Amino acid sequence: MDVAALQAFLKRVNYKGRTNVSHETLKELHKSYVFSVPFENLDIHCNVPLSLHYQDLFNKIVLRERGGYCYELNSLFYYALKTMGFSAHLCLSRLANDKGNLLPDSVHMVILIELEQRYLADVGWGEGGFIYPLCLDEKKEQYQKDHAYLCSNEGDVFSIWRKDKKDRWAKLYDLTLDKRDLEDFQERNHYHQVTIHSPFSKERICIKPTKDGYISLRGDQLKYATQNAKETAKITNNEGYRRILKRDFNLHLDINLPILFTEEKYNLRSPRNRTEWRTYHRIRKEQIHDRYNSLKPYVSHDVEEWEVNHFPLVFTPKSDEDIFGTLRIDLLNDLEASLRWIAIDAPFTGQGLGKKMLSLAENFLQQRNITLVRIPVEPDSKDFYAHLGYTEMFWPNMPHNAGPISMGKRIPVLA
Image (cartoon, rainbow, N blue to C red; front, side, top):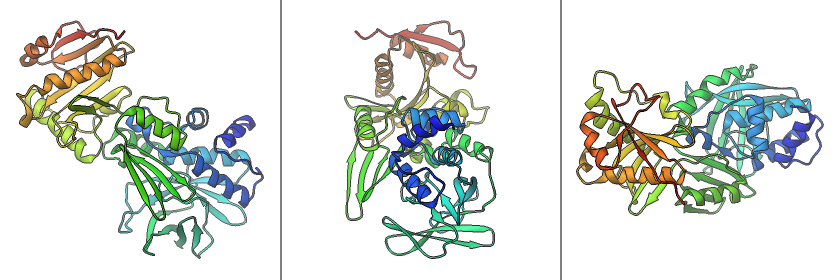
């Protein structure tokens, strides 16, 4: 990060104070960062790869005015601190569960800064994170905003604690002060992007602290929280979602959001939680895999699901009380898309829902100016798709694991 980039960074985080190496600078810069740059995981849900390389982080958070999750936010803050002359290095921490037990596979990034005393910076925690760096050498309670924190250690292992509203201490994480490199976090950064078992893949998250509380957007639930009250609202469409991101989080989203397409009585949307992901994979396995590929194991964590421009979707009624079926939209290029893993769950077959689901998918693609839809088809489904206007059509790069018959359909261009 050069001088010009540092100035752009400071402008992005709304920091107007001194830039000398001091505790006061560190404290106020940390505060400015967490109040200006939201914690958000939208790229994971939009199939956009996450990079920890400096230029990618700078482009995303500073130039494109986006937020990020722990690895991204703390990495960029680390780069800025080093440019400003702070003695800082990355550390690895292990998160604790609600019972205070460490999660063995968890890897959280934090930053150690050495001044007259040692300070811990963490601008990538999200809801309930600390506003100012914590002093690791201070053994008394450290009060910030509406939380109290405590740093303790047993030998080389430090523990970070937070007091809840009932005056009970809960462990956030343990860490050692060993110097770590970005490479130590790359594997876990990749994991969070490709597996449904990651907490970040369960729902879209956007969080930012406010003067007297915080604002959070989890899935379609918007919450304004203060010490004394909480207000909630449901976001019903992507246009409203974008407006909220801009108004409340100052996020200028330049990527496609997870799909939520609604017509009449039905939704075609991305799965929102672990239960829905399980249902999504159960339907696909029972209705497609076990019928046509039973000799091979079904892989629910196939990385193909999370490739850029691949959108796994569920088909539901407006009430969201059931999941009728599944399909995956693969955007092949600017004008072509394919529909894969098309299935209606057994209790809902024979009701015309497959036709309605495909109609929703086609209308969605039409609004994205897609003009050709391709579908790999099994022989026993050929007549169904032919009745809907699909014809056999050569597919130069047909997926090797798809049905043996390539069918396609031209979609009229919207006026």
